[in-house]
Amino acid sequence: MDLIDRFETEKIPLSIGVLDMDWHITDIPARFGSGWTGYSWNRNLIPNPEQLLQQLHDRKLKLSLNVHPADGIRAYEEAYPQIAKRLGLNVELEEPAIFDFFNPSFREAYFKDVHYELEKQGVDFWWIDWQQGTQGMLDPLWLLNHYHYQDSCKNAEGGLILSRYAGPGSHRYPVGFSGDTIISWNSLRFQPYFTATASNIGYSWWSHDIGGHMLGDYDEELQTRWLQFGVFSPITRLHSSRSPFNSKEPWFFSETTSKIMKKYLRLRHQMIPYLYTMNVQTHEEGAPLISPIYYFYPENDESYNVPNQYFFGTELMVAPIVEKMDLTFQSAKVDVWFPEGEWYDFFSEKKYTGGVKLSIYRDVSNIPVFAKSGAIIPLVGSEIGMGVDLPEVVDWYVFPGKQHSFEMIEDQNGQRYKTRLSIDWEMGMVELALQGDSSIVPSNRKHRIHFKGTNVSIIELPNKNDTAKFEWKDNKRTSLNDEVFRLLKTASLPYELKDKLLNQFINAKNSHDLMNILHHQDKELRGRLLEMIFTSQN
Image 1 (tube, rainbow, N blue to C red):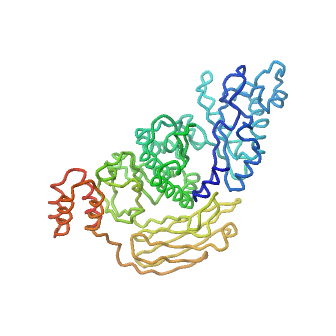
Image 2: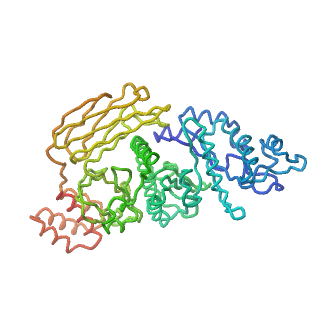
Image 3: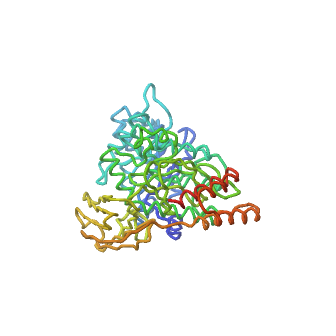
């Protein structure tokens, strides 16, 4: 619990704890074979499992245990006597219950005598880590996923398992575990494309080893970029092999990296209202949280040429940075295709006019995330903590557009509550419409509407059907010269060049002058200046 205490002290919210295989006994007598499979608590590491699970639940966390079931249930297991009785095994010969998920009797013992007993102690769901291939001509992972998921549906909250990929069609059962990832830039480069493309076969809920699991070396920039992608992924789960040198807690890294990681982990928790609503759409309508760009622009060739760019729900577009930074400018590049329309940087609120492919540059603290014109994103506005309690304060981030609405969905105790926020930018009108059982949300709930990319003040509304007016004339403007100064200030360039460039921008009178300045710069500097010119003229 010291680890959980540290997360609370650092104000880093968690919702689920996952215990890998060391939760069970792994050091077993040689006659039983490998210690990979196990169902008896390692009481040297966890002397009082029931107390641990209760303490985690008291902190509003759910808990999952990892299982490698291939070696069945052997005689050293606490559950073995009951298993032997049910299956008629020879106890004196220590006859094992051989793993056979095709056998109904073994399945019954597997669940009733092993998993149910652990669930009574407080285990909420299972991570099925099958990696032993086929048995004969068949892969038992299909059956493991099927029966584990069906069994988990007995819970009032619905079914949930974390498991490995069993082939096309297996999306119907688990949150997908994509395997033990090698810590490398190549692994990170592959994951956004992999995740978006998997939606083509309906596999939309992926849980990656964010930051990588094994091998590789110490690289704070890689860890930061991977976490940023992980926050804008279906599941954010940090994982690593057991090594004192390979850890994922933010405080394991430098103060600068730690601060960035904490910011994004908190943001992920803030996004729960948006994420939950999008995942309801996945469950009920088959609309994936992460969609390739070509889903919505199939007739535009550019949509097929940005494989690592994707839509994150209905309101956001993400282009993770998967390359190392340029040390001269302390920023990295990703090429982004902006479809027709207007797009706003979710963090800086700068506007990008669509119909163009543009190189985007960000320092290590930022990931390119863009809100479409008129986007509405609900976030947790109250102080964030452990668990997923429905928020007292909902912060609505709204971006300039025409007319748009977003219906936030919240479920609890079998009841559903819908909150629809509608914005009419032309009329300057906000409307809040509520539907459902209000008893499931905090009685003192309030809504704060943040008009991003504008100078409009925040509007606060109580949790009732209501309307409000606002005045909007124009977007926020960025000063090109100020942007150029900020870029040059930290760049490792000669002061004479910095002075010359800044003066050229100050004295530039038109677009022709600006293009002439760009023409004489090298590729790296030119690309960064071009993005600044592009956003300053929107």
